[in-house]
Image (cartoon, rainbow, N blue to C red; front, side, top):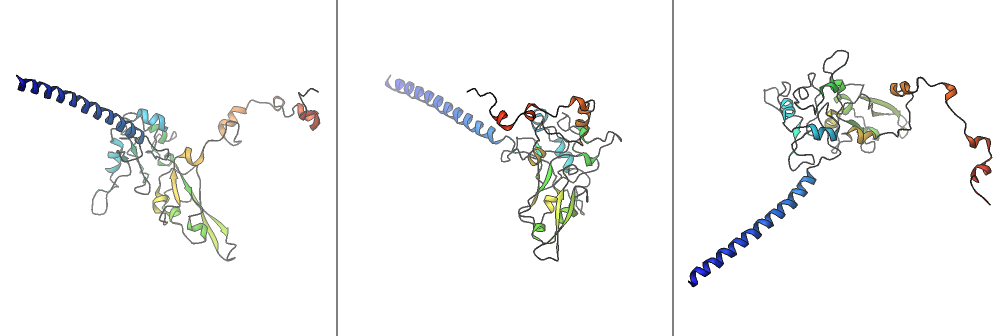
Length: 281
């Protein structure tokens, strides 16, 4: 009888111990998952494939199928002289990447985008996360690699050796849009009085963010690097108007000079009157 009682107590203890053990594992798993999910969010510096939607819409639309990365690595030009397959540009994010897990991205210093004529990664996207219309020329109705917009290159003038007076045009020569996306600006070297600076200057309206310049940069930490466009350029306030912008011209085309008020009440009063406006003594 006593032995039976001991077995019951032991079984009961084991039962409650297992419950406590499982509860502890569940709580730990929840905490790990929360931290894991937080880490899995994409860095604002993440570079997406060509024709990707805006980051928020891209995350919602991408189904993480990996077809774009597969098309990238299997492109015919991605083989060496011996016919061996090289690394693809696009990678699918893993747990140790600062990118939403399972989504495609690329790191130019590792493997840049080679701006394939047929842009194989875009047409295979089944969800529309890569919008083929963004890289389709409206006139020719054909894919146009010049319409890619993955980011924009930025030059760190303090670490670029061309700004030190050393001759270097590695990024300029690597650019597939030669003398369009990157131009060399000649400036006089006042220190020597004889030589010239050949400084790389980026045209953000042409640059596609392919990263070939970043890959080619000769400095240990690249002095030219690609950033998402919204990070590199920011956004001007809505109260600024670019006079040469077609949308702005369209917005003001019907306005007449008589409709524009260029004078306010301050112009008819002295500074003292204006500064004391609304004060009662």
